[in-house]
Amino acid sequence: MFTGLVQAQGTVERVTPVGGVVDVWIRAAFETPGYQHGESISCDGVCLTVVESKGASFRVQAAPETLARTTLSGWRTGTTVNLEKALKVGDRLGGHWVQGHVDGVGEVLAVTADGGSWRLSVSLPPALSPFFVEKGSVCIDGVSLTLTTVDATRFGVMLIPETWEKTSLSTKRVGAQVNLEADIVGKFVAKMIGQRGGLTEAQLRLAGFIA
Image 1 (cartoon, rainbow, N blue to C red):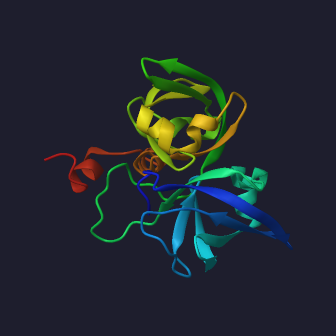
Image 2: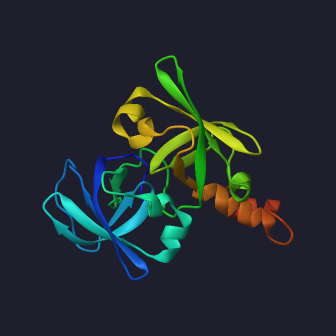
């Protein structure tokens, strides 16, 4: 699990296809250096496993499923990616619960400066629409953000200067592809409502939402 609070920006050093899998070496400067074999790192919102490391660089592998569902297939040498190491038990949760399981890819439709901050408008894949609500949470390329607007085909977020400076979202231009992960809470609620009989008062009471 992650929080969507980016800890470092990494640079893709090389991308090597190996059969149906792609090996990716990424170099980064975390405040706490070093990597553990087998640990999970969110790379532009994609949960990947460290299989090898050398100094400040680490290697991850992407399977066909990951390549098909994320922007990773477009990574090249020099690509900048947002990085976050997995949560430890007892860590402070500052963003929202992020799994690193990308739900879909959106397209940047507009980037607009607004009072020292920036508004980002992104296309909303139809399959993800039920999980997006105004003032809810979304993870874009590994960054936890609050939805400011939502309609049938697009959604908007606002980036404060800190987010603009410390993440790769400032490099995104109109037409850029970004990884999207909907809020896990919204996905489970939508699943429950969609079940036969819908979400009942008894279920809400059992879950503690009604006293």
